[in-house]
Length: 596
Image 1: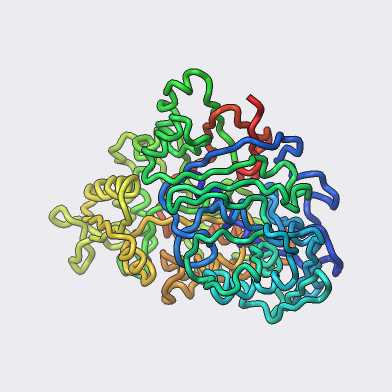
Image 2 (image 1 turned 45 degrees about the horizontal axis):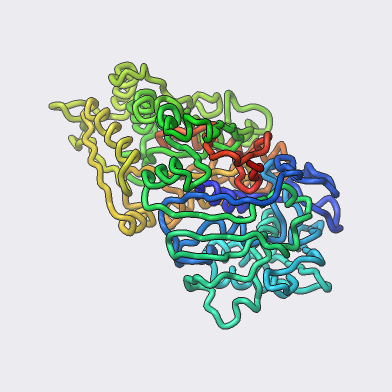
């Protein structure tokens, strides 16, 4: 259940940018522009309760299985709590700021004015769970082992380091091949390993050996695939650091694994699992009438968040001639009856995704103005129609399941693109029928969405086939872009960086294995990505992201689905949460157990 949150906590910091240092001297934290929101000597993170009671236990539930305790390699699947509760990094992220990190294992950070190096000075009290100090040598080892034997993203990041060397008793300096904006923070968020702990062991292999780490919890029990039990370290060195006050309040954290969602739900209603993130709006409305809930033993709340929507939807592969014409893509957007489907599947509880960075200040709305317009003006001849004016809103149907008005608009757009009905089938001038395949992995709502869309297209004379395949075949076809349409999702950060080129850069049109699933190939997109990476101030960076959002949305590469503007949480009393929710939403590590 909590896997999405833990994954989000791990993934989001990887996409942070950093501004040129206004000083070449040690600092307690770093921010994209100017200074971090919290000054040196702050008491605690603003969304934690520094007076929260310590003790008690919490039991989380997850779907699936795990087969390793190492979350940093491609082999195996490790519990997300390994990253959030067991390992530590040089710096810690504030979930209330898109662009700030504060000292954790490193008591200070010093970024060179030319951005060609960064120095971290370790906290003198930092120790591993075996009592040994965290040293500069351990930091260098961590970078090298992750770069050489960890997941590919580590190699991509840390391969940009030209040299890592100890420059003081507790100091490590990383020198870069060229000036870097993003790399200092990626290094600050690097999980730190003990060199001695990995002596004689293969980092790349799956393992159930409990690691020696510096984090707040140690592993006390593991049942492979079924459960993992963590116990708070009495000797945890960092309990009194400002970034940790009010965090990690439970003495024991248990994660139980269940094979399916029904089993996980039954475990929650029986009190086996303490906290549930409810993603089914129908169940949220009607399902919480079991005995414990009726007796008042269950608390519930909805928490708003400020995360960008990202993009999830049916993706056109524009490498295929069928979808190369933007008018065809727009026509199929009109043929998709979102309002009816959202009501049928979600009780109308979700909102439609209007653009890639919506629900945040990075989303494009209305006409382009100011610096955003200035960035786009040189590309006026390749911009999609309506992009500059903001004329890319999604169609809205009557929600009655017939979709007549929007289907008429779809028919008009298809006719403009050269498609006509002949003997009940949509054909082009050469007599070729309009037919395509939607590649699917698994079933559930994904297949329901695709099936409903296929039925709508039948009314336009379009033949659509659904092709569910197993995971291995799906990944292989995804890598080589061997599909007509797929249903995919991009999680997008409030601090976008170099990953945008991997997601949407034009090299992904032909280079296999990128996340440019749609085959985006517009020079304006590449230029906006370059502009956000080289922006020298906050206004310029925001303008570039909005411009990128505008072009991607206006190109109509995706038929967007829905997002949830709130998080629905239910928990067994006497669990408690802080009154304030941070920008990124629910954080499990700030909860506590009140005395019953």
